[in-house]
Image 1 (cartoon, rainbow, N blue to C red):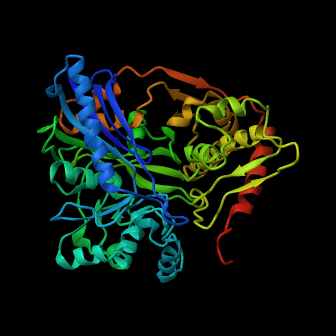
Image 2 (cartoon, rainbow, N blue to C red):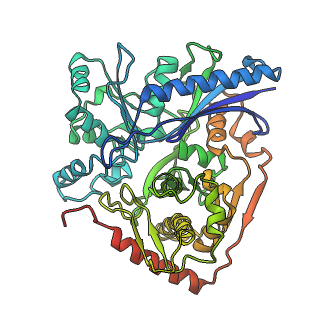
Image 3 (cartoon, helix red, strand yellow):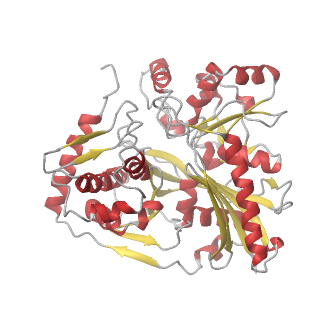
Length: 504
């Protein structure tokens, strides 16, 4: 038996999963929730030590489960990492301790800083560096988070003066803590706003522009090669040989290996990636151009268009934790089924701004169309529809940018895909077929595949010949007229949310 492990460190939880290499069958797993901290409005932080410690505990517990079913840890031949992206961590090389809380991808504290840097460009345009990075200047990406730390955290400034400062995304932090190697993979590097997409190197131009010290950033490796070996614990000596940002890991897990293959993951936010091949294409419609994967240092890089959405499972959490409309996230499906439609209610839950295609960090959540007839069931249904509308905008943008490309099927995963009503609403709203994998751990499986390829345990050909997991299919049931009318109303609601927190 050949087993592959995967660390999946996300915004809501840390997990360690063990898969059977040939079939993708999940053998054991362990999951621990992680806290998000909200010290000020718009700020979202996490304790980097908690992220590491929960990963270590998940590995230990999963290994205990392996032992309990008579499988030795030595059967796990390699481990991959899938991680929340853009989240910025600063730590000290000597102490190994974080210098402040990690600034999470959702955080908007750098909105004003982003505008300052936009104004510094010759054209005063957020897309000034997009030809090089594939990204706009925006608080979402890591560069501004690193700059904020250097501006505002005394311990970060002191570590820089002492030559002990280390900066990285969550993958780099975990790889360094587990193996002692200071490295990131190309997919995570492509989310920092500091990577030259064409050269696969940190851009000295971008580092100079943001006044960030190029020398403190980690080495950039491919998504599938040996990063290092775990130093301690039950997996001691096992190679970490795969690493992908969690959305790219889902792209791989769904076998989106050909141009036009498209997946959408519904986690805290919503992230749609479409494979666009080995040449980076720039979007004219607000999509990001990002690295999809690179299976080995000598292999070509595969690029993807990405629609990044701030609206996803966080809207369900908001209905539960902030409004108290439900006690458990699973209740939203039953509540929303209590009505046939939203009765004209449109909910734009952009709590930390809108991402694709608007890129407006000052947008704020709004509810439109309320009447005395409106009920919590209508609001619940409108919340689910909001995620669907957002995805529809992303898919339309991809087809606009890729002239002759028609996306006929969308592959989906993530927590919200367990909601069959949502899946049908999504199919209705996008006017396309949806395929939902019954494998719940698509990102983990993608990371495990990268690890298997990086450790030369499996080949890409072997992976593509694997038996596919069973799938649930959904087909659109709305007419084109109904769909068009709903999208028009959605865009009217979005217009009311845009620039809400700005001075304009």
